[in-house]
View 1 (cartoon, rainbow, N blue to C red):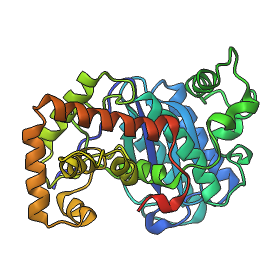
View 2 (view 1 turned 30 degrees about the vertical axis):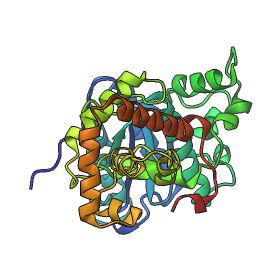
View 3 (view 1 turned 30 degrees about the horizontal axis):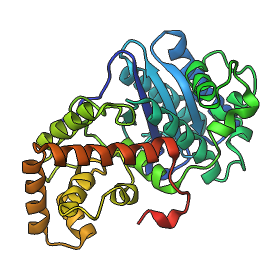
View 4 (view 1 turned 180 degrees about the vertical axis):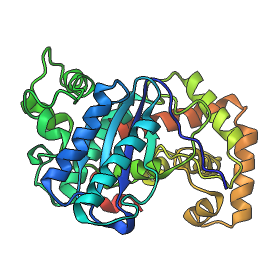
Length: 328
């Protein structure tokens, strides 16, 4: 079966990750971590990628990259192959080092950019490598919490986010963790992981639902409803608990709205939705068909667009609760 083509176009920002085969360590020494970063720097100097944020852990890595000329795939292939050969030579081994092709997920709206940076920083803390991401030498937070840093690290986007969020005229590294704290709510981290693992890209990408007008949100719903057939998993946008809490249960069509949000915003399949709502699969399909018919009604479309936009803002702007029990 042919592999799905990579999403790769000039100017794309992507969250990139890979781990060792059979979860084995891919970085066993500080020297090897520095080698991997040096290989990334080679691709930066060649103008093929920009490194916006990163974290190297023991058996995997996370990168936030921009592809100025649409050559992310070939750049990552070069980095991974050169690193694997050097690693195998050093450790007298052969065979693959990484479990396969890297995972990547486009970062298509501003609020999700900040979420991915927080997720990358949070990985360091969850792995127990440091109490705070800014204390870990092989993560970008270490440099953003200080002035200076390696020349191959593009600091502009992250520094602009700090200035914008805090209303600063000039970047202050001591305030980095106010915008990018060392911990991330578990339910938001689950969405990031699901998007990273997903091979599906919705039509037109993910419209910035936080700031889009209701007309654009409604068009996003129509486009993605046309793609969803109940079998293919969509790329998730929201935690399940946040999507369900956004539904106005006083409406007579609350169940229909619930199916629509779980399908379109949470990326759930119809069998998963049926189990989540405690209904039969046939009932879930009937509710989905009602959604398809109702979507062309102005009152229903406005209600769904309003709830989707509200839930998106809660997730990526206001933030959701950090209590892990809220994500069932």
